[in-house]
Amino acid sequence: MENQNRKQHYFGGSSSGKSYSLAQRTVLDVLEGRNYLICRNVANTIKRSVFNEIVKAINNFQVADYFDINKSDFVITCNLNKSQILFTGLDDPEKVKSITPIKGVLTDIWVEEATECNLSAIKQLEKRLRGRSQHKKRMTFSYNPVLKTSWLYTEYFNGLWQDDKQYVEKNDVSILKTTYKDNFFLAEDDIEGMENETDPYYYEVYTLGNWGVLGAVIFKNWKVEEFDKEMFAQYRHGADWGFSDDPFAYVRASVDQLKKKRLYICDDIQAIGLSNDEAADLIRPIVKSSLLTADSSEPKSVDQFKSLKINTRGAKKGPGSIEFGIKYLQGLEIIVHPSCQNIINELSTYKFKEDKQGNVLPIPVDKNNHGIDALRYALENDMTERKVKVRKGLY
Image 1 (cartoon, rainbow, N blue to C red):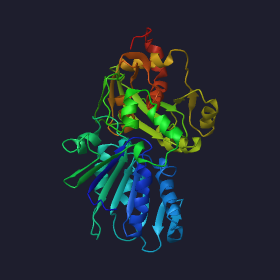
Image 2 (tube, helix red, strand yellow):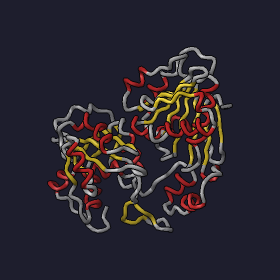
Image 3 (cartoon, rainbow, N blue to C red):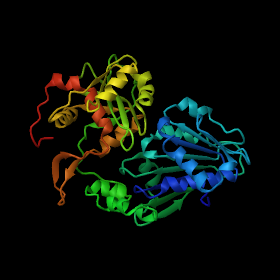
Image 4 (cartoon, one colour):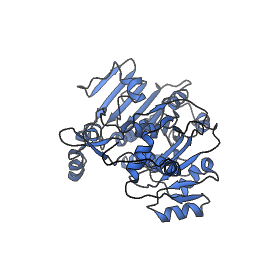
């Protein structure tokens, strides 16, 4: 509550209590008259994440009698002063423009899991912090670091952050780093899981909370570039199932019909905790009547999507299909629309395993690759037509 910097960053390792402590701050701030807008990249992820954290904070402070919690509209109103906590996803820009509290102006915007979002969405979001208020306006970001090539690092950390510090501030920007060691409420098995991570990159990022540097990245043949997402005659659609810990992932892409080796990634949706009904509702406006190729390891989900009027088939997976798909994708020129932040993150971090001596092994690390899996399923027919040759150990 004491930090009044305009831009505030709370980053670091997993299980450090970032979201928990910020939820507590939010409740206390609203009791003091502040209005909050809390965002994630996809609206459907809010109700099972940050919304629940706010409700738990209200209950833990034993102030539930002072709040009206509307679980349908995702609006929490303080009955003492009519200050509000509003929630939205950045996947609906028009909705963000229309959000306003019933009393006063927005004083705070909190972007949870900021690495899921792209810079252009954040720039639009900043425009919501306007109007007169007795409180200084603030924008708060919380996230695990990914790579130093991330817009978060280049936009805010260059020239300010010092790796030997835990907290720095300058020019109305503050940065606080926390790790699991700062969370005194973790169970022993939680701590062991963090400390026993064997992959160097994931240990640096998720255990130590450091910005990652990758040497063994799988894909180097891609770039982020603006283009008209609706300019193509044909699209490929792919999906990877998920629910609790793993996200449901959807990708829409198009293969350039004149230059067969050029791939455009147009849309990318990932969300944790979605039911199949919710996932179908989320992608239906994009897929329409087109064919969706999904992970065949969950035939019930494939059948349910069919019953929900999504034209779905299971991918023809088999031995060597991952290596086959990686080799095919490596042979393409991949252009990613800047709105596809999840795929950008995955392409940046999808890497080969390394042994203890740092030698690269011809085995992909099976983490943070759900969008890439969905992309492989979407392009299944294209791969079959091109007859990609994969030799053992060749990537």
